Image (cartoon, rainbow, N blue to C red; front, side):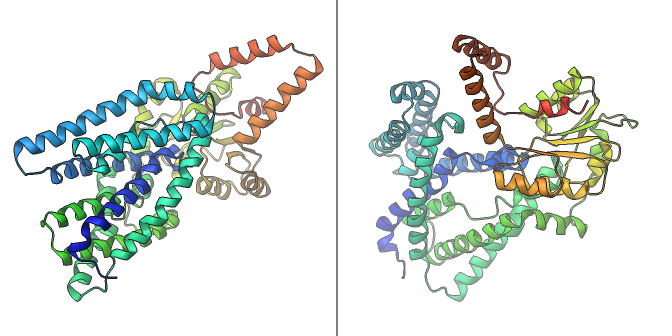
Length: 464
């Protein structure tokens, strides 16, 4: 199917809406990868890129390229953004109370918010893409409270994803030699040069080679916003047809290659590191760590999030020596203030574990739900006199880890169910009255207001 300038308006509106739904609905879904350092870095970079893209779209959609027209477009964008912040912080709570726990009402309310922002954008003459993006910012993301709503949005996302790729495929033409050459250059810049630059910048700012590499492999495709900008530029005559066709072709190619690189990201990192293309900066590990050389019979805690903090507090309460491993630079100051012994490095690297005293450790507890990390820990501790407690998202994964030698696998959903069953049994047996159980639970919540995890602190106590 060919694509000419004459059919830009109809096709471009479809692609604008489907692209923004394909990308922005992702902001509303819980991603396990975001609990990892590289996931949070990638999300931050993508958010900054999206904001820059929105600014460009506001400028391009101005009626005339005059200071007043551009300023008006930017002003409308700022106003809509302010409204989204108000909705997120105040009005969304009213929607929660109005829905009274109904996932269906929450989903309808969120869709109504999207329609309201799209209507507002259309009324003031701002691109629908801007309205949809800002609508996504107005919706809170809390998987624990809004899981049903998020699942409903996931279904909507799947619908728009199918439309998006169908529309994108319809824009692909039989390429000329010129288009192939331009598309090859664009794809190479996106799939190779952009990740290389990202790695270099992240290494310069203090991140380790592995999170820097995995982050870059999450950004190696032509984004949906780039396609929208290309459409706007083509409509305005600022982009030629061959270049536009090359951008579409490059986007299609990099979406395929990006899926492959993300699936094999750990393997790609290992290959680059083994061939010396990534410098493993153990000097930074030494300089940023504070662990005694003579530590033994200790606990190694991987990750210093909410669960890691509770485990560290438990070790201190039972007078058990421990070493924390963390690689998030934002936590370095916290580690320095709260932990007497910590290693600032990547647990996937053997040097980091050796620095943490894996040879003399009694127990390794991973608070990170990452299968590659868990597999790595099991491999590195095979044949060693050290027990490993891991974290998994599913029972099947937990069973696999146990068969391979893990001492215990923390499955948060399973632990939550077991705890609820215990409460019901205690209540049914009359060991606690309903009011006593409620007061006990309230006290537990008040003691740990920020904790969203069920930890394995009791398991450490059992190894005293």
